[in-house]
Image (cartoon, rainbow, N blue to C red):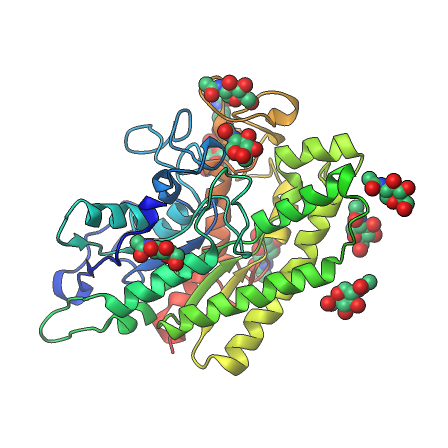
Length: 395
Ligand SMILES: *[C@@H]1O[C@H](CO)[C@@H](O)[C@H](O)[C@H]1NC(C)=O
Ligand SMILES: *[C@@H]1O[C@H](CO)[C@@H](O)[C@H](O)[C@H]1NC(C)=O
Ligand SMILES: *[C@@H]1O[C@H](CO)[C@@H](O)[C@H](O)[C@H]1NC(C)=O
Ligand SMILES: *[C@@H]1O[C@H](CO)[C@@H](O)[C@H](O)[C@H]1NC(C)=O
Ligand SMILES: *[C@@H]1O[C@H](CO)[C@@H](O)[C@H](O)[C@H]1NC(C)=O
Ligand SMILES: *[C@@H]1O[C@H](CO)[C@@H](O)[C@H](O)[C@H]1NC(C)=O
Ligand SMILES: *[C@@H]1O[C@H](CO)[C@@H](O)[C@H](O)[C@H]1NC(C)=O
Ligand SMILES: *[C@@H]1O[C@H](CO)[C@@H](O)[C@H](O)[C@H]1NC(C)=O
Ligand SMILES: *[C@@H]1O[C@H](CO)[C@@H](O)[C@H](O)[C@H]1NC(C)=O
């Protein structure tokens, strides 16, 4: 894939002690961390997939009506949302204007002979459709997406080769800056979708299945990515677990078709996978931080518990959601058809949980980001992101 074959990018990261950061619209004052590095899937992709030539529209969001509420421009950017996504909202809580830019847009700028690309806020490596397994997304998307392994590899080689310029007084090494920055990861949902879809297909009924082994394999891979990020200098990790994947409109349709409907009206087997995976991710992170990776700190968002809460408090103030099950953009049952320029659009996007058949609206993503940042211990463990990045909690 030509767009992914470029040489490593040389970035100049401006040091906050030299220039300072302008106040951002999202928060008063300077950001709480110098930079943010984002990894994972379509919940946090801000346009990397736009650069993947062989990936088809099912894993791209660079066409209308995606971005219909995006500021500025009300135009599609590659975010799988009507507006900002989860990475943008969390970045805003940290004091940035939005997510850092997509890695592949920088790689392409390099290919166009831009000598230096200035990135002061970090980089977003996430790729829609990707998962923990190296091949997740490739067949669904009609071409190879950037797997977690590749995203982490791109980051580590960038850190190795980057010139990070600081003030003459306080020059920072790349790993030094990375250690003060937040790593944000949202991955795993697509692995669960593909596994669950496979076994929902009647022709695979006889294929032997071992959920424990499958989920254990995912978590083992997750641990290798966290270790590689740590080896490159990262110390602060905000991780959000896969949510109740059986509740998105595409899976609600499958639930009805296959008579596997749980108490929320969602696909029971898929939700069960999410419920089993969360504590496994929790144990993995706890054991890495306590034993193997000195100084590693994390904040884990329990997206299963968050989903259960929002489904039962949809219209409890300050929430104003009216429609938990239908996609705002999409045709057919639950709006489970593709979201594209010919799909019908709901009148009031902020009252829907789901923007399209897989992804939350900007409004729901905002609720999640606020919980990740400042939850009191109900949904985020062992500390929230605000506590994670507080100077007193730094290693
Ligand atoms: C990112 O990683 C992939 C897989 O290792 C590699 O093919 C690609 O060249 C890398 N991209 C850049 C811009 O370094
Ligand atoms: C994308 O490619 C996949 C795999 O070939 C195919 O199933 C899907 O229908 C395609 N989607 C679009 C929108 O072209
Ligand atoms: C599944 O196995 C049963 C019993 O061995 C057999 O009768 C059936 O034809 C198989 N179904 C499929 C789809 O292979
Ligand atoms: C499923 O996998 C687990 C973990 O690999 C293993 O301990 C267990 O025996 C397997 N179960 C079956 C029924 O094969
Ligand atoms: C989900 O898990 C529960 C508890 O382990 C179990 O009782 C139920 O049968 C499972 N449902 C499905 C559809 O797998
Ligand atoms: C719900 O509506 C109220 C009043 O319009 C507003 O203040 C509040 O922010 C809304 N909540 C959400 C989650 O959008
Ligand atoms: C749209 O939804 C928001 C949030 O649910 C609500 O505050 C607003 O009144 C709704 N607007 C209309 C026109 O229904
Ligand atoms: C939108 O998607 C539907 C499938 O859900 C397809 O039939 C239609 O042709 C698509 N429209 C455009 C403009 O791509
Ligand atoms: C923590 O937050 C939850 C959910 O927002 C709320 O129900 C609970 O009362 C809060 N607990 C404390 C101790 O503030």
